[in-house]
Length: 170
Image (cartoon, rainbow, N blue to C red; front, side, top):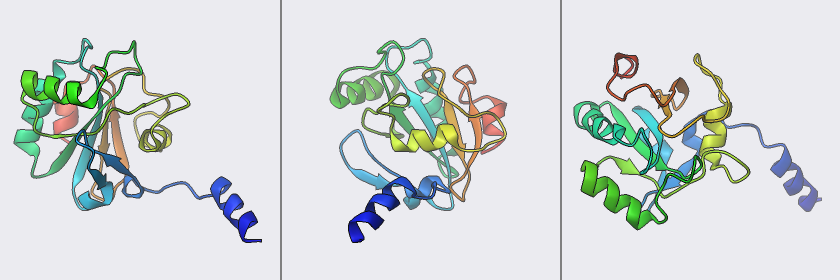
């Protein structure tokens, strides 16, 4: 009977109600629970090192410096779009810190769509929000999470990190 209950719970687990149900590994391999950031806004960005939007790292770092007391910024490197991410976490970290002086949190390399999608991104792309839901279209999409861990805005890649669309919500 216990085996049956365990199997049923795997298939009928209620959906997460916030990002606080998830954790991630940093680019250095440290596990961080998103619940650590309760009471703060979180901006999650899927990033890539070899993309036309890669220069957004510069403004993401500026955003982190200017708004870091109010919002936690986390970059999630991914190679889902034309394999535009470097091969290893060490290469990604070196690229980001060397070229853009990135000091905000970076996760290990993840998948943001497809059969191997990271569970956090499965949640984010399915979560109700006032903007849109569904698969990520390209690198540097941005997900703004409120202080309660709920997705409140989603921004496409072309929206610059320091645009009023984003900063007015921080």
